[in-house]
Length: 152
Image 1 (cartoon, rainbow, N blue to C red):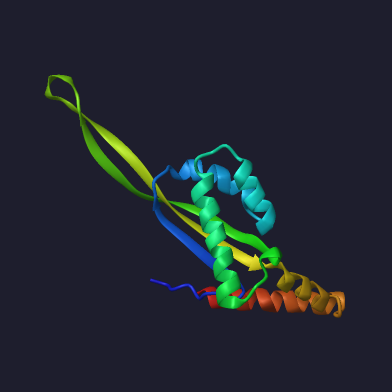
Image 2 (image 1 turned 60 degrees about the vertical axis):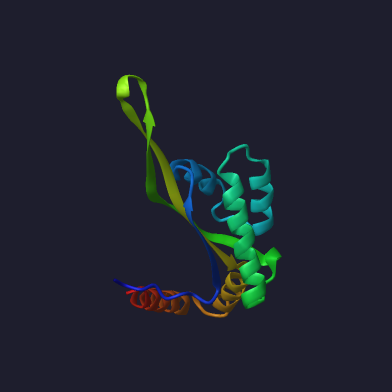
């Protein structure tokens, strides 16, 4: 199994075995991916879906991790990664007429949220503006190969 190296500029929060369908949670995640922290909290408070509350708690937890563990400012955070994976399915039997039983399936899901500090990206853009176009392309190609090699 290949282990992922943790990035120092991202902060994660992971919720496992949340009792809801992965498709219902994905519907909310697609709305908040790539948005800022404050905007996301506002959107989640106003959306009428049941999946919003556990996602709200996870984003709040990830922001608390960022401010406490790394010392990042909550106003500068954006949601860099938001994914929902299928979890196990709890199965129960419900008794029915004539001695029969029907299966009741309760799906679960795992939600991962990563927050990133957008000030890093702004510094990177300012850093790249000092180079010519040819040097910028060389640097971006070099960084892309380094990123690929580090993911292996």
